Image 1 (cartoon, rainbow over the protein chains, first blue to last red):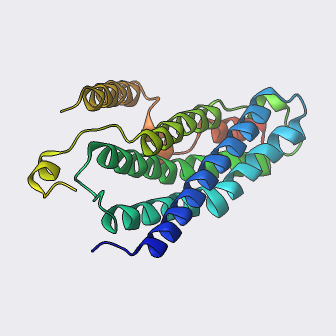
Image 2 (image 1 turned 180 degrees about the horizontal axis):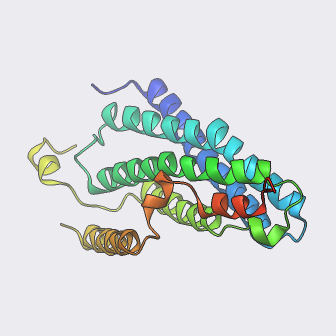
Length: 167
Length: 50
């Protein structure tokens, strides 16, 4: 069922805010990961890894769910549909992939954070872990590509979309 | 199927292959399901009972 225009706009606003918020949180996460890799002060490295886990549970995970939920509403409540256009399907797959990796990665972040919490006085080099920077960087690339798909909307209908009445 | 979708599928397939390769060599997502090497590093720093 198609949403009336004011509701559609409100839904689009919510989807943009959630997705851009997720992108911003990933950028912050990447910044913290770079601090973790480059800082020479052990306390600063520990703090970066401690904040990363909190950032994950309070911001990254909720915003990723919100982005998916608002995206589904936008797809199902507008003429685009969920499975009619390739760009929508690709975005959905990318979103689900990113969320799955994020939820799996929260376990690693918990371990990194626990190590940082207990490693009082340890030197920075022994705490460094390239994994958060790698994952944040990959997430950033994925979300930028997803945003580009949403803006450019490259043409192409799926077989299901071709069977539907053209809109 | 549009060319850009094929490009995305190829990229996805290459990433999946890399993921499998990483998993096979012990550097993949299996790490998410077990203790991080940093935890092992921590153990090295913990004072022992001696």
